[in-house]
Image (tube, rainbow, N blue to C red; front, side, top):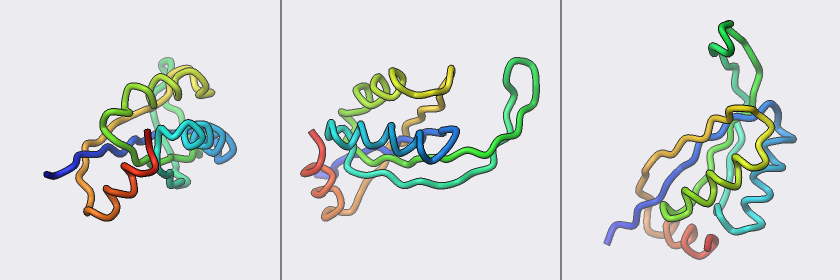
Length: 104
């Protein structure tokens, strides 16, 4: 049986906020791990084009945790409209087993 997992992409204003949010998710065992990447973002916000330096996290978890992760992030994320996006993925068996072991 192929196990399905998700990657959740979230943008933050800085690394401190990314670590705060992912730390809470790890503590609650809603994710198995997170990666951080600095990014340059350009977007429309309230009628203006904005440019910002942000940090993106890539979170790995089970598909069944999507709703819990989304709700938890929305509750504490510093942005008025946070970017929380889900991608369906498949993982190699050993990594899939590890995700299953590390998440509730």
